[in-house]
Image 1 (cartoon, each protein chain N blue to C red):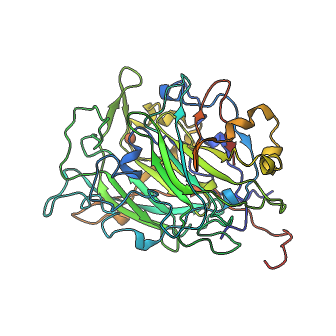
Image 2 (tube, each protein chain N blue to C red; image 1 turned 90 degrees about the vertical axis):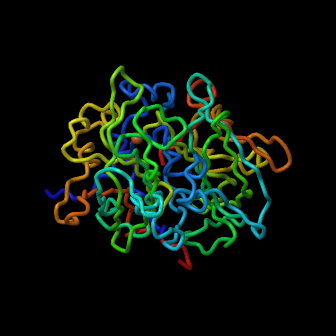
Image 3 (spheres, rainbow over the protein chains, first blue to last red; image 1 turned 90 degrees about the horizontal axis):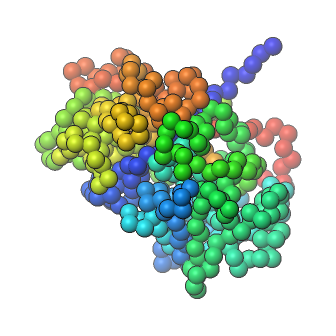
Length: 203
Length: 241
Ligand SMILES: [Fe+3]
């Protein structure tokens, strides 16, 4: 018998409390190495689509805000195409699709200025509801946490989203849906423990 | 390209979310199992970076923060290797971001509490993109070990933090590189979150005399493996693909 020599993935390690040095150096006062922190800007004046502000806080198991968190988002453009390497074609050249923010040192809050994404097809061609992938790292998180942010003003398409539909515990679905806090403003708080523990995905 | 889903992540190779020896993980680990989901386009695609977005000194931590004509204190080293996927193929255009303490084990960070001295010529951040064959190299100062508040007397082994982007967001990885021969590795509660010795060894860079620059810098070799993509041998292709 022959066992095929696939290589094993490098194991994850915590990003630690000093992740800012490598990922958002300007944010933590290391200026002059990079012009701008990677992922700081996702849109410009010419980006297509409805502008939104997406903010949130990640809460630990004692409901304390995680002030040293770093989060990244990845999303499609307004037409539902991912920038960069989407096999279906080219996305809006004025949209990066990827953003990175450190939590505020005092409050833990992170804020993205982006656009509302379009719908993207599931593997079988059914359309998924508009959503944004959120990835969370921090001291104490051994492997980055993946979740999805859905929109509260999309009830009809959320109800037929192929990923949400196959979740067994329907009572947890609200943990994946942002809250609308104003025109074009959404809030997505993440909880690591408790009754309202956010759903994380093993993708 | 992004036309295959990724091999499922082998959770047994990664640290569990909760590891009692690493106290910060206790309140920062989800209590419920993550929900398995097949990759969709949202996970198979990922941000694409360009070599032109990087500055010429980004991969040289010896010079990228130093005052003109000055240099940081410490042992000069080269860290190089390849980023590979699970199929053993080099991953081109992968973005690696690194951060580390200075030679004395001190980070340039507002929350740092270790009393070792800051080095006015060392920032501790750098980045590099892989070439066509997945290879990369950075030049830096060997970081020092440092104490941290966990147990009463825990010290981190010398290490460099790595953040890695492959071609799909499902490959996103943050890890740490250790140095061959360091007795602190086996004692570290963060290292010990990793379930197997073989997986720990895969994060330990080997001294590489061949790549050493005489009278200048020693070299360490560190390969990183990202999840591979499934081949699409019998997949029905949609019309137009
Ligand atoms: Fe560290």
